[in-house]
Length: 192
Image 1: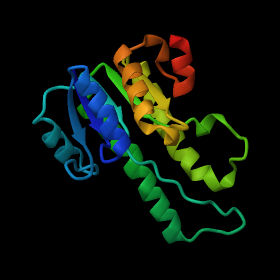
Image 2: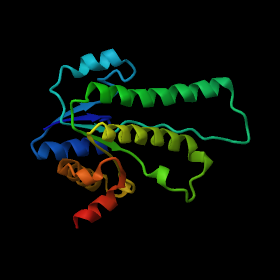
Image 3: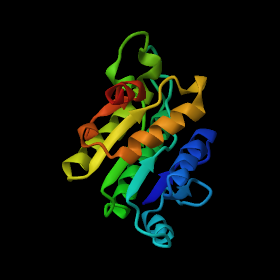
């Protein structure tokens, strides 16, 4: 299979790519160094140089800003946050449109949108970014593609083991994952 890994600069991404290669897949790694995230036409041209992907994995940075609800933000701050949100949101839409011949889309994401314990206003914008990403994932699933989010929460303890498990989950192409966000531990429990 041909796998596009969007967001490949971290050690974690390198470990995931290595697991795919071990299973005889072709992995094409993309990031800010070799992909113009903000320019649809440039991205389309750059990606046209590669074989069509079977799987597209979104592992891109998701920013977050502290929200101090006791202070009014300036117009400049609002515009900066809005611009950053639009960049992250539209970059994923562009990538989906360019790669929509693939049948399998995976978002390496967060389960923060599901929880409220000890996570308040300080993470509100991060929640918004992740929620928008998750809605894109759900729209892709409605388009008839296999699309889901995997949250590798806790991976700092053993990033290599999490990368191995994530690669196994992705390669399994399990239809019951479609349209949902999963903690990696929950998905692994299904296999036991």
